[in-house]
Image (cartoon, rainbow, N blue to C red; front, side):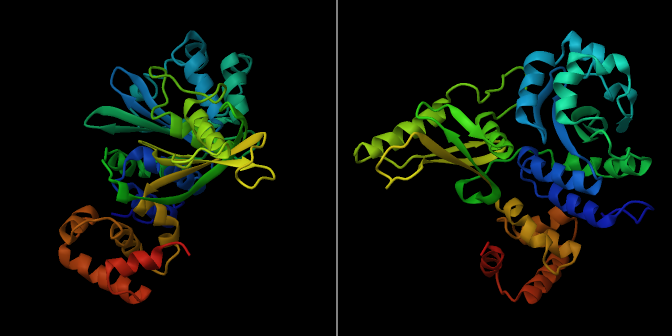
Length: 367
């Protein structure tokens, strides 16, 4: 159910976030979209999410700031005296306060500004103040969503905290585990190029390429499993380079230099190409690796559906129709009767000029 129109809270971005959280595709897969929508709705510089487990602390993490800072945090600062002295015990805050959402005000304490914790992590990330909401289920903490603003930006206000609080229940609803088949994935807009040498060492990668590579190589970002960084030759990249080199050397009967990796973040497709003037059979000094993230179809088609001339309910159903669900399952997902599903579906087909789910998927497919 959409929120009533409270002063200072816009319903449109909240409706987008609510629809996103009702896909049932797994919280890791939708987290990049969720934080992107939240930072737009609450005008933030960025954000991060921690998946929490009782007694285990942070079991997974996603952030919009450079992935190298996440790697540094878990390697050198997480649950150490440096963190405790700077911000206290993160495993007990803010859950112990009994509040769902809390505002960490601008960092002006001179002692904090001199710590390695601040100067190695928060200052490079551009974190000057942040708001955090705790996600609980059946009395247990499941996660924490943080949004931050950089120095020089307007301070967070009570209405920002209120908006964040309003989506906590939907974020909790989105924290599900799913099993997807090969046909459930579709291409997304997440793609980038990095440059490597013949030994598989990354030589150049923009922030987006680093983020996608780190997601592809690390199903979980925490201090227990460890985070594989991009500093040393990577076996997966080395394998792709060896296949590409073998092709240039004239070896036949082998697969193309393509690697598919699947984990909670999605399905990642890595492809190797020669960079520089070449006919494809001639080796050059550098190799390009394209990284593409594939996600559930509903998530991939979401940007297109959100721009369609449909009502909010019709957009929700339109995205659910891209999944293989019966009308009864669609009604349960939307909290409406089967008859209402049929009515919305008929309206969608009329507005878009289609007559079946197959035609709908064709109409929604990228040009």
